Length: 396
Length: 176
Image: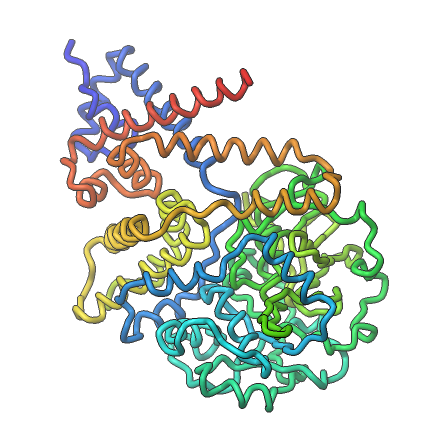
C-alpha cells in the first residue's frame, strides 16, 4: 500500500489541505491504521509544540489601541519612516529599578516641583513621553536632555490625546484634552491645583502649561454612564481613558470610607513583592502586561481578564511593578543634578489608582517603594467595576 | 480602501504581538512594533490607493516580520525587568514572599520555552511562529519564500525539535 507522504500527511493533520487532496488522504486513512497513527502522532506533536510556544510568551493580553489611533498615525507624513529613532529614544529612559530607587532616595525629601496630571487615554505613547511632559511642566528643570522637539513628539504628542469617542479617526487640534475621569473616584469638589496638561509641542507649550494649568473639574469629565450591558474586559482595556487626579486633591476628602490608607505606616508583611503570590492570587506584573502608557484601571481590567482565562479560582489580584509609576514621575532639580523620581502617592485618593469590586467590599491600594507599586483587589474577581461599568469575565 | 482594515486589526492584533514578541523578546516593544506594522500597512495602502488587498493578514505579517528583522539588527535584547524588580523587592522585604515557588516555576518554564525556541534554526522558527500566528501554508510559503510543499515537513521538523529542546532542558532542570 502506498502511504501518504510526510508533507501531505502533516498538511492534512494541520487541516491545510484543500478539498481534493484532503479527500484523497482521507480515503487512504480509512484503510490504513498506520497512517492514521501518524496523523495522531503529528497532532499530538503539534499540541505539545503549541504548549511550548504558549509558555514562551508572558501571560497577559496585548493592549490594543483604538483602531482610530492607528488610522490617524498612518496619516502622519512620516508614517512609514524608520522607527529606529523612536526606538533608541524610547530605550534611553529605561533604567533598572535600583537606579530609580537611588533617585528616589535623593528626591523623596525634597518638595515636589512639578505636579503634572497626564491624560492617559491610550496605550501607544511610551511612558517616557509622559515623563517628558512632567519634565516640561517643571519650571526649574535646567536642561531637557530628551530628544529635540519635533522628531520624537511628532508621533507621540498627538498620541497622548484622547482618541476615542466622536473624534475617532480624525486628527484633532491640540486643544483641551478629552478627559475621561472615573466618576466614582473623583473628589466631590473641584480640585484647585489640578493641572490637566494637554499634550502640545513641548517647546512652545512649556511656559504656558506651567502658568495656566487647566483645572480638572468633575463636570468636565464626560460621565461614563453605568451600563447594564455585558462588557468584555478587552473592550474596556481598549476604551478606557483615565484622568489622574493630582495629589493636591486633598487626601482626606478623597479618602474612601472603609478603605484603609495603606500607604501610612505600612507594615512589612503588607508589603508584598511581585516575586510571589499567595495561593489563589493572580499577579500581574509590569513584565506581564504592556503597562507602559496604560492606565491602572486598564491594568486592573487586564488583571481580571487574566484571572478569567487561567481558570483557577482567584481570590485576589495584584498589580505590581511600575504600573502606577507613570502618572507620578517627577523631575526635580537638586543642586546641579536633575533628578527624576516617582512621586509618592496616597491611595485610594487618586482616581485611577483605585477601583472597586462590584460588591464594594474590596479595595485596591497602591503603595510604593519603586519596586512594589502594588494594587490589590482582595476578592474574587467575578465582577469588577471600573469606570462605572460592571465587568464580567470573558466567556471561556 | 475597501478592505475592512479595522476588522483585520481587531482580529489579528493579538496574533501579531505574539509573533513579534517571539522575535524581539520584549513585550512592550512587540506591541509598539505591532502598532507600527499596522500604521505602515495603512499608510502604504493609502499611498498606493489600493482597492482591496487580496490577503491583508499576510501583508501585515510581512511588514511585521520586516520590522522585527530591522529591530534585531539595532537593538540588543534587554535584560528582563522582572528579575531586577524581584531582587530589588526581596532585598526590601527580607524575602518575605508569600509563595515564590509558584512564580519561579512559571518564570522558569517561560525561560525554558524561550530557550528552546531560540535553539531552532532561523527558518524553522519563522515557519513555526507564522503558523502559530494563524497563517496558512500558502501565506507562510509566500512570506518565507519556501515552496508550499515544503511547509508541512518544515513545520513538523520544527515542532519536533522544539519539543525535544524543551524537554531536554526540562530533564536537566529536574535533575538539578
